[in-house]
Image 1 (cartoon, one colour):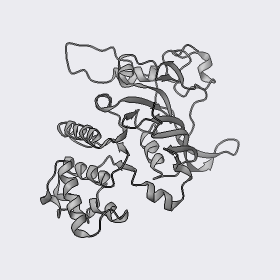
Image 2 (image 1 turned 135 degrees about the vertical axis):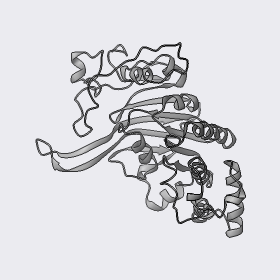
Image 3 (image 1 turned 60 degrees about the vertical axis):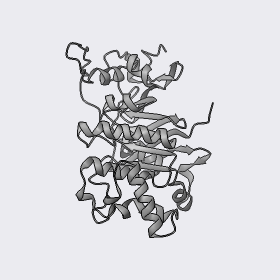
Image 4 (image 1 turned 90 degrees about the vertical axis):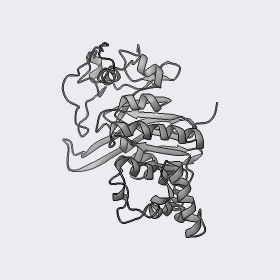
Length: 325
């Protein structure tokens, strides 16, 4: 057994709000509220859930693009959450991100050579402009673009091409872990498959490890080794991909999977429709956070918090009813 490349332990991010709650406590949005998981070298962990559940915030906390309220992130033997600015800058070579929106994540005033080459210059991986441009051309060809794109600006590319530029930028410093923050959600369906296949090819070629954040469960099923399901700032189920998709245990996971469209119109899937709306992360429910919408809840679920329990090898569920507690 290899040691995990990434270990996340009780990670929290509370965004303070003006005003106070009853009792004088400061009001805050509990975007991420006690998340823990490991990622093994070379695997892809899919992180899924409804919009606003804390998926993208978790990815940004891991990279310290935003500072955590509490918890720890360990990359190998280094505690990312305890590094000073100099050490964190050096670690950026190993930790990179592909952003969701290819139209917003590229500086419109910079050429492709400058966008991709910036990290090469910052981390002193090239000696001069000629070496930089040669490396950028190599990266462009790696992601399916060509040398003729070197002097162009982002507005001259399609959405899929821009995302390829973003992928090339992430690859420039030879990272070990890449956070893919919904990298295909802003693209046309026809282009999504091309980008996902590219990410898989790059993973195989360079030995990359991915945290793949997404809300499209069909995409996650295709690319992920394991899948973690988030609800209201917490992970409610985590399992190998095949086990999760063929045998979902948590009621929330069941509801998510029941909403995935079935390509064959002759096949029907029983739809699980959840009652009510997602509670506010400012005032999350007591006990199990899903109990206000859960079709199998028990009275105890309203006050007993649920921890992840292993019900099968590698299959963890936070549900007293389904986990047999």
